Amino acid sequence: MIKLAYHDDGKQKWESHEIYLKEDDFYNNEFDVWSHNPFDVHGYGKTKEEALEDFKKKLQYIINEWKAFETILFNPNVFEIDIVDVDCFGREIKD
Image (tube, rainbow, N blue to C red; front, side, top):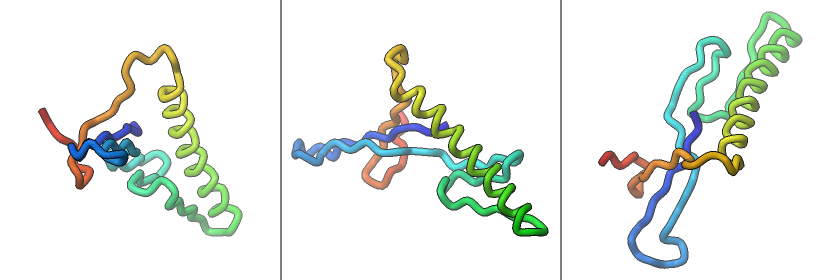
């Protein structure tokens, strides 16, 4: 699940508050997709055509994940978007 991360450096300046994508790494066995870098997609196969089909399958999975995230992010009926507080290194702050 794609999340948003939020960090406040406490300086109360124009760049003190930051929101960015925060995604816990995962591996999807069905599609052989590692989420650490969702744009680092590799298709494999015995032929060029098989490799292209494998690439397209994996890319479609990633696009579907982004579409689901888009639906949640822009849905006015969602009461709370999953935003986690992080420190300046992007590590989640646990309460």
